[in-house]
Image (cartoon, rainbow, N blue to C red; front, side, top):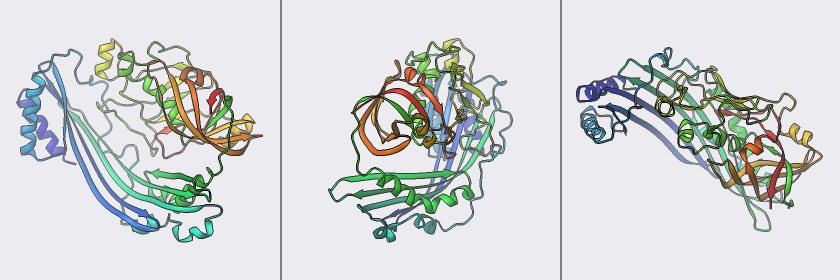
Length: 440
């Protein structure tokens, strides 16, 4: 990481008119092997580097970025950036965060314990180990496997944030990822596609998933064959942990400072209010070592902390960076949530247990398109999944619509399982809702 280059850029900007500067350096090195129908199809090695420059000049502010990290070119780039900022209108709320808020203990980058050894490995063999193409004839029972795609990758990345008032924060992590997708055809000519993936910061945790990835993807693909029909109406709905973020992300976005400040949030007036049910508790837990999504600081270098986002239905925080907090006349927090954890209900281990609790309804395993209104919270999403009765899957369903309002939906939350996937930064288990509007 070119921290010396960043310091030189900062000094140069201060010498040529900037009063304050923040620099963000990102570096990512990835090795990837892709397979197609049982053979290696792609091998890549990529290095991505970028420098982001936040300039405060005469009460004005501008943000710029470049991936050309040559100091001669950067000098010209910085001079042009400063001239551009001088043409902007002054903004009294643009400043660096207070020194009491910045992170103090993120110097070496591995404080979150997300950095594994990048040892030499045969990535080709690892990628091919997920393939089931050579044995596909023995697996084809009522369908034909038309295509197989897969990827295995290893990445090491580093982020450094520094500013002209003494901030220096570093975050490093590794990522090992595997994914596979299949397309199958049935005798009547219908096509079905499905995928599976997994990821971890540690090779020992992802290794068992590599060989299983292809079979999991094929199983999810084949499970869609023979969809039935379900009439429109109000249903008990179980949402699989694989796709449950689709329902929580709009809630988190509505708590974002920019949305609140622009009045483009259906939760803009709800801070401190009990908007959601008693059994809905969501935390930001960025300080858990070794867990995906952990981070000691945000993009401003402000120290993160573990805090409730929604506690027993009460909205506890907005995500306010220094600028937005100033505009709103509120105390700043952090710019965004980092590692979201939805508290399990304690009664059900997974979506199958939720189905048993519900008895009859629809299990949603994927969302296909649709939209939501950030200002009102209304939504309409295409869904696919399974009709279930007596807690057991009856048949696949697809091309149905799930509609409603996020406040109404979450207030219909019945139970939360305990099956969130460790590979996701948002730890959202499978969810059970009552009286959800589903249309065919």
